[in-house]
Image 1 (cartoon, rainbow, N blue to C red):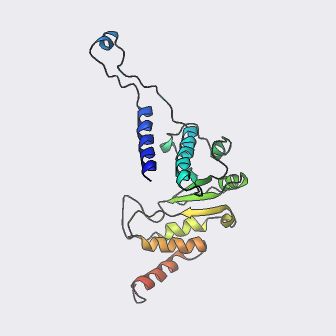
Image 2: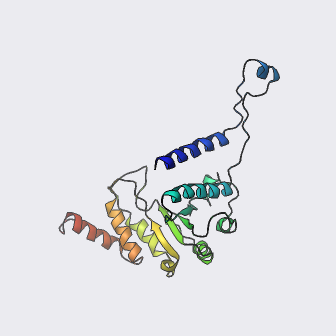
Image 3: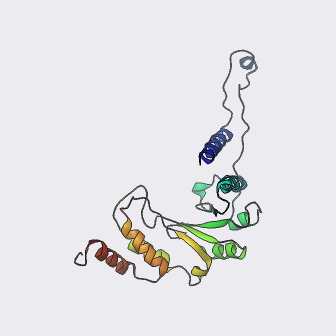
Length: 217
């Protein structure tokens, strides 16, 4: 683990250096006379190809310790203009057609707020890859920890999943940032994962009865 930690730290430092533009630092003597920067770092654009290659490097390091681990490349928020740091991404076919990721790498779809793209899931499955979903803002919100139970949000997200979703989805990650304050949400989400048509409020009542007693309202 120590070697992996050193590698990740080195990668982060290298990444920051690459993204640093001309530092413009001037030295006293000949550099100052010429007006050229003391150090000039070449500007490099971070592309979606860079992200995939970085993924492969990290997985390679982990597999030296455990050759059987599985990995997933995340598509989270890549469709959003807010997260356009990885240039060149158009849709899931950008990844599927690049040939950079090994065949055993799963692709994790963006499930932000209950989002589910059936065509995207089918394209990933047809390519022979397993499909995961990174659910976010469903069971809690990292900036607002509370005991609020999102029955409507969870119920709507799972209810709209198509009938064949269970044949397409390998796993569904439910966000949990509230440090056990959102146990009710996680329980309801677990019930809905087993039966997307289940009554979210009924599941919540069952959780309350189990956790606090049947007489609680």
